[in-house]
Image 1: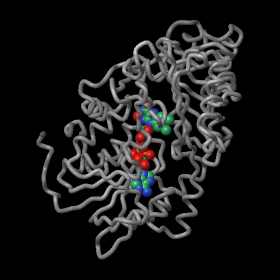
Image 2 (image 1 turned 180 degrees about the vertical axis):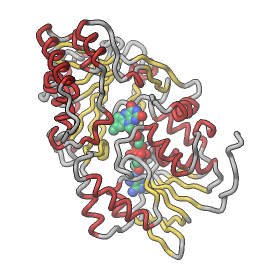
Image 3 (image 1 turned 90 degrees about the vertical axis):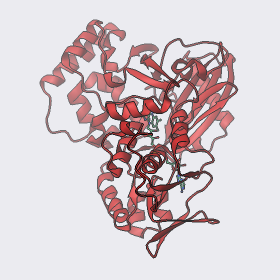
Image 4 (image 1 turned 120 degrees about the vertical axis):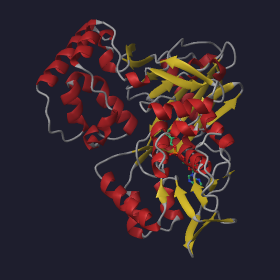
Length: 446
Ligand SMILES: Cc1cc2nc3c(=O)[nH]c(=O)nc-3n(C[C@H](O)[C@H](O)[C@H](O)COP(=O)(O)OP(=O)(O)OC[C@H]3O[C@@H](n4cnc5c(N)ncnc54)[C@H](O)[C@@H]3O)c2cc1C
């Protein structure tokens, strides 16, 4: 064990609500710092969005396709250390399915895959936009037009983003921009001429667990946490009594000196009995849910592809991934797998539809697109994730600040994707936990 294990907080009992990555990472680091920590997780298995299932020899990430990459080298090296030898490095091979052809991803780096006229139109509109680039931008539509031009925006960026976010591009705030590519003029000209160039280079190479799917990261943390991880414990009520926190699941009470909440705000306001004005603010925070359809095939059908983006509005999935290309251990020998992702509004009937019907509808659609042959399907399953994508609309900043102020005043730390209501990836989740605990270099805790 490294010198970073300092047993100086052992009298402080810390309760962590939620056993997704944020909760598990908090428990790991704080237990290494000497806190007496307990994770309370409502599901029978920790992991949250990073759950994986292994069935009939197939491994699928039920919360959608997850890969390990980061610009934060310190966090990346920590994540990789959790996996040890249980990892594979892959080079991204991703395409967009546009009018029946595969266009290299990101779209602006694949212009030469388009029919000639469309390629030239994209290039000219891109150059025109760059010459007239506006500084004052109202919403995401204006950003796309001004940064990538009307042709790339209308052919791909707008339909794809409206499909995944389930809202009009005009209602998306500029808060989304951090995740949008901003390619150089030279790269787009090269792409149009068919001279290879890459976008999104920080995830051109990515890591993935050899065995166990993305949940292998969670399992590794679980094995290293010296405190308790109580599964099947849904926090229903938390109250502060004489300087202690009492958390109940309706049957059992747990007492802590300090509470950290990584559960979605929409649940947390009930658990902490927030006043009506805070509950109303939380109701105004919009989010999307995710349905994933896991498909096993009795043949190796798509060689080498990592993901396929599908902007076509008539097809339910916006993206499919190919887990057996991430690790050969993800499918039995000679077989392959596909994971389709469909974002839906939280009240969408698809969330209540019979799983067999959802699976056959998606298989039919993918068969029509020639992504698979329906008569080769040997396994299918459907998973639903209520909290998948926080929507950063024009409301959210103001509401989130008032909600945070309430929890701050209660003395409850909020950490995590839906606890902070931020569009964070695994690396951000770990970095946020480290910041809360005052840890500068997480890799020292590996
Ligand atoms: C489709 C998709 C793809 C993604 N791909 C990537 C990727 O490729 N790379 C990457 O770095 N990141 C990716 N992410 C982001 C990543 O999944 C998240 O950053 C990370 O999982 C967030 O973890 P969390 O603990 O904050 O939240 P969650 O995983 O949501 O965990 C919250 C936990 O709280 C529990 N809980 C809820 N209510 C209660 C309660 N009342 N009592 C007890 N427990 C409760 C839940 O069961 C859950 O386990 C992706 C996300 C999505 C949706």
